[in-house]
Amino acid sequence: MLDSAFFDQIFWGNTVKAYCLFGGILFFGLIFKRIVSKLLSKLLFKLFERFSQPSHDQAFVALLIKPIESFILLSTLYLSINQLKHPLEVAIFHYSKLVGKVKEQIPVSIGDFIDRIFLFLIILSVFWIILRIIDFISHVLLYKASLTENKSDDQLVPFLKELFKTLVIFIGFFTLLGFVFEVNVLTLITGLGIGGIAIALAAKESLENLIGSFTIFLDKPFTVGDLVKVDGVEGTIEKVGFRSTRIRTAEKTMATIPNRGMIDGVLENLSLRNSRKVGFIIGLTYETKPASLKKIISEIQELINQHAATNQDGNVSFKSFGDSGLNVEVNYFVTELNFLNFLNIRQEINLEIMDIVLRNNSDFAYPTQRLISDRPLAANEEKAVGNDAID
Image 1 (cartoon, one colour):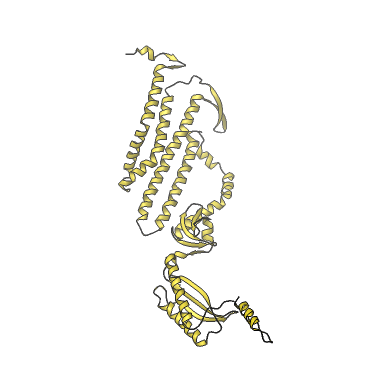
Image 2 (cartoon, rainbow, N blue to C red):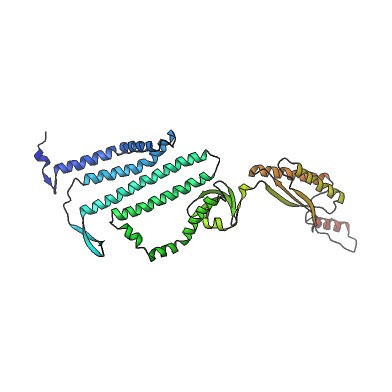
C-alpha cells in the first residue's frame, strides 16, 4: 500500500493526489461517455414515450447522442481540470463591468478564464441538446401528420419547428451574455432605444416576410403539396418557412419566393381546380364543303360531350377564314387532374378528331402560295409551279 506521504508530494504547485484525481476523472469520463450518453438518451426518451412510437427511440438516441457526449466530455474536462491549482494565478487581462454608473476594471486570472471558456461551451452543449429535442418532437409530429389526410399540419409542423428553434437560439444568446460575460441582459434590452428602432427598420423586409408566413397559415391559400402559380413561377409547394416559400418547378428546380410576394402577388392554386382546359384551332382546307364542315363540327362536339373524361362545358365552332384554311376553334375541359393521365386523354381525343376530319372528306390546311398568270404555262412550268405551291 502506498504511503499517504507519496500522494502529498507537490510537483509544479499540485500534489500527486490532485494529479491522480485529474487523470482518473478524465480517464473514466472518456471511457464511459459513450455508454452514459446512450443511457441518458434512453432515459430522456421516457419523457416523450407517451406520444411517440416505440420505433422512434433509435431516432431519438441518434439525435441526442452527440450533444450529450459533448456535454459529458466538457463536464469531465471541467471537473478534472478543477482538481489542479493553476501555478500562474495572475491577471492575464482586465475587462470592464458596469457597476451602477461606474465602469469597474476586474482582473481575470487563468483559472477564471478557463472557467468562463468551459461555462461557455457547456451552455452551448445544453442548448444543442434542447435543439435536438425540438428536432425529435417535430419528427414525431411529422410522422403523425403524414397519417392524416389534411395537409395543413404537414405545413404547420416545419414552421413551428423553425419558430421554437429560433426562440431557443435567442434565449441561448442572452444566457451566454448573462452567465459568461456577466452582462445585465435586462439593461441591455431596455437600453437599445433608438438602436432597436434602427434594427427594426433594417429588418423591415424580414418582418414583412414573417408576417406573410403567419398570414399564409391563417388564410391557408395553399398547403404543402399544392400545385401553384405565382409571379410566373409554377410548381409544387415543398416548404413554408419564416422568410420564404420553396416551390419545386416542373423542371425540377427549386424556386424560393419571399412570403410577402406569395400573399401580395396574384396566386393561382392549380390543385383546387376541378378540370384542365384544352384549347386549340383546327385549320381545314378551303375545299371543304359547308355540309362537311357542319358535320365535322357536330361530330367533334359530340365526341367531347360524350367522352368519359370530359364535362359538358366544351364548345366547337367555326371561328374564321384564315390565310391558309378554315379555322375551327375547339375548347373542352378534362376532369382528370393527374398530369400523365391528362396527356393520354388529350392524345386520344386529338386522334379521334383527326379521324373525324379525314372521314368527312376534308383535310388539314397548311401554308400555301398560288401563282396566277395570264399566259398558258408549259407542262414543265406547271410542274415547277405546282412544286412551289406545295412548299
